[in-house]
Image (cartoon, rainbow over all chains, first blue to last red; front, side, top):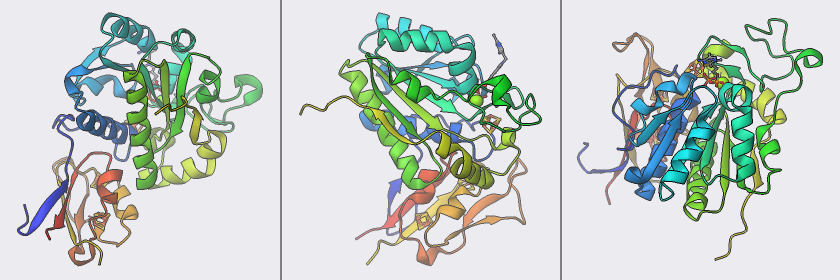
Amino acid sequence: MKEGYELIYKRPKTLTTKRMHYCPGCFHSTIHKLLMEVVEEMDIQDKTVGICPVGCSVFAYDYLDVDMQEAAHGRAAAVATAVKRMLPDRYVFSYQGDGDLAAIGTAETLHACNRGENFTFIFINNGIYGMTGGQMAPTTLEGQKTTTSPYGRDVAKMGMPLKMCEIVSQFDRVVYVERVTCNTPANARKAKKALKKAFEYQGKGLGTTFIEVASNCPSGWKCTPVESLDWLKDKVYPYFPLGVFKKPEEKE
Amino acid sequence: MPAKGYVEIAVEGCKGCNLCVINCPKDCLALNTSDTNSFGLYYAYLKNEDDCIACLNCAVICPDAAITVYKKAG
Ligand SMILES: Cc1ncc(C[n+]2csc(CCOP(=O)(O)OP(=O)(O)O)c2C)c(N)n1
Ligand code: SF4
Ligand code: SF4
Ligand code: SF4
Ligand SMILES: [Mg+2]
């Protein structure tokens, strides 16, 4: 500690001291940090239960110092449903990639949303299967090259990238939907606010809350972390617009 | 007058992603490219302490929560 200075920010205590295995600059890490800051600020560490997916964040339970439960690939929404129904006073979130939530787990995702299960989806959309080596995901952009779309995604054969916020907003019992990102400090602050709002709405029992992160994957995209920010700005945000798609009416 | 700040960056916790460096409004940070941590990664350091205004931008953007920020008291 420097003499004559006061501490104004340090790593949240709710994030373990373990070094995260994510690649440099990966927003999985940023979201872990912001989420744990929210848990620390809301003082809900012993009341929070997270569901891990299969994907790069399969080891999230090593870093997020709250109760965690692993789910089979794509099934996090079903597991979150069970946890929340058994323990309704807990803050429950599923943490899922795009391959997990929007490919193998589409059915679980949509039906949990349709039922209005009172937990929070944290959806990390990096447009690719990061963990398995950069294959095409349902969210891969038109023309984007991946190891399984080496000439770029051909939408005539592979369909259009799925816009999950736009889709889940249609369900009556989904109450809060926002797409956020972490490319700048201002946007990271907004992302944190959205995570906090989602937990607050969940605490009031309002219904399903869904936060999509327009995320990056420097390794899968074969670029540097700084270059990944350019791709986000030039390609991702125009197709996956940031902002609030749906929110409850606030009655104060 | 803006606040006077100071940051500490955990050498072993930093992955050299450069995101703090490009997001510091006062150009206080840089990557040390003449040394690596034990993971073989370049790490960021406070190259210009005088201009730090304790804005927290670097700490907010750092994916790995490797940055601690201080503000001059008073
Ligand atoms: C039942 C099953 N099918 C396939 C796999 C292989 N697999 C592991 S992770 C993954 C996709 C991960 O992509 P995503 O959910 O987008 O997460 P990311 O790594 O990009 O964060 C796949 C297909 C598996 N582990 N289990
Ligand atoms: S492969 Fe991609 S998503 Fe996975 S940790 Fe690395 S950058 Fe992040
Ligand atoms: S606190 Fe602000 S001014 Fe100081 S190093 Fe960090 S980003 Fe730069
Ligand atoms: S943002 Fe964090 S991990 Fe990246 S270079 Fe700066 S201190 Fe290191
Ligand atoms: Mg993915």
